[in-house]
Length: 177
Image 1 (cartoon, rainbow, N blue to C red):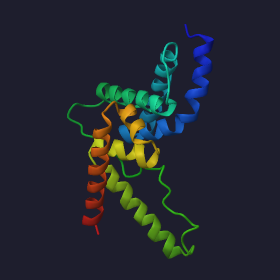
Image 2: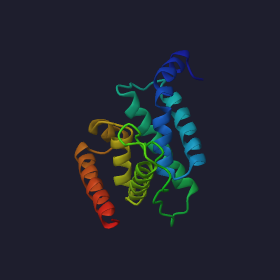
Image 3: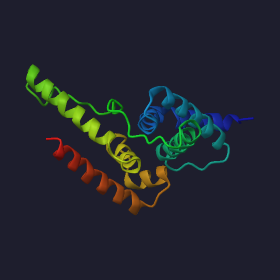
């Protein structure tokens, strides 16, 4: 039985971060429907945990639950030989065209859209730990400490993954020119 206090805490903590949770789950699972299932499972886990949990950073706390739910879900529902590299269209959180920065011409819009697609594909090609760190930092805007909490890794590992991920991303983009 869930207490009223846990329900109130849930309403204050979880709903503001559902969009970030879905984006992370979609990146990790590679599928929109699976991401919805993962976020729903994570929300239930969060509600149950709020009976006793002390939450200092709600966003990082909930994203850690989403990450763990995604990893559990994929372990149960994916073939052990399957290696996920992400989908090229999964980075919906990145705005590919900023009309304020270009002249609004069809050519400028097409170039911006093509560049955005190249970046999405390059991110999708990264190994999961590097992709995860980059998505949490560059798309969800988490601080290093929050990423460390969400992924349950030391902050030095987060910094290393971000550095390696950015370098790998730059190399992929340079090689495709």
